[in-house]
Length: 364
Ligand SMILES: [Zn+2]
Image 1 (cartoon, helix red, strand yellow):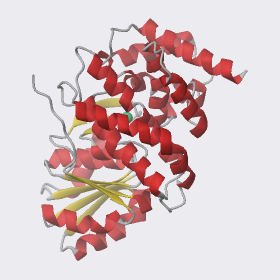
Image 2 (cartoon, protein in one colour):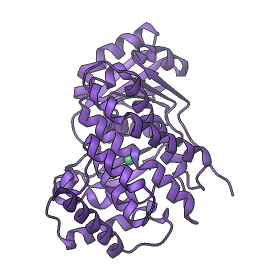
Image 3 (spheres, rainbow, N blue to C red):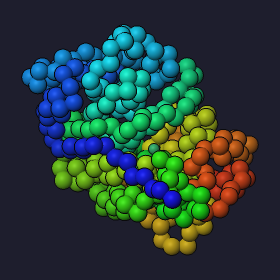
Image 4 (cartoon, protein in one colour):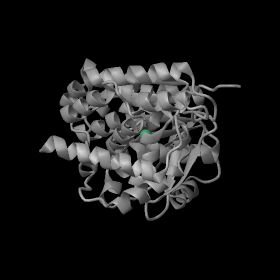
């Protein structure tokens, strides 16, 4: 059987990395489209314009303010007209990156991602998520190929609030456990629909090691605009290692649970990475682990402020019925198969209740 490992064509990280943008765009063609929400556009739109013009690249820009729906994609395509640009530049957080990927998909154009926050690993991956007008998940789509280049300028990323990086750490910390489950499951498949690769598992394990060692240090400088060595390592772990780890290594329960959590009253408003962090606690419970992994993860969460219970996602009073409904929705996620045994909604709701009870007990 074949196995596939996918990755961006190039990954560039460091303070001032954005200065190289024109050079990278010019290698792909002479006209580009910058896609960003209005906040990011105000922050870097002019600078991107100058960089492209210095590299003799014609630039058009499209901004937006709403969530990523099929209607928004249609409007942006309408604004841009029929001619496909040589390259799309997707700049910002998850929403802007995904909007850029959606346009790249429409025009069959390569996409360069420029994350301005490290709140998830979307910049390296080929998938993007469309929502309906009520912000319910509508579809997860995939580009034919991964982003051609990722430019992670840590001078920019370190200006973003620590809470953003905390979400990115939550999204990344689960990856080694998810990849391990995917590899252990007979039916385990990565995001390319093939068996996971050892290289992806190795990257996910290194991602975990870096986060345990450096998350606290990186969070201490987040927001300052002054990236230090720990910050650089954590950005690499949350954007690059986490992304490669899940795409070629596979996801499991922690991410499958976000299907249900993103419909649960207050919890639905919590950042994706915080939902994943909670999902990992449930996964570790379902794994019935007897090693020190759970204690290590709980200690890290306590140290840096990741959620130890649903209360940490803003939902302190979930009923058994709500937990079972969320579990039922999560069962529909394809990643559910990437687990060493088949689970029922009751198994998952039981595990969630154990996580809740344990969090309460430690508070007493
Ligand atoms: Zn994720």
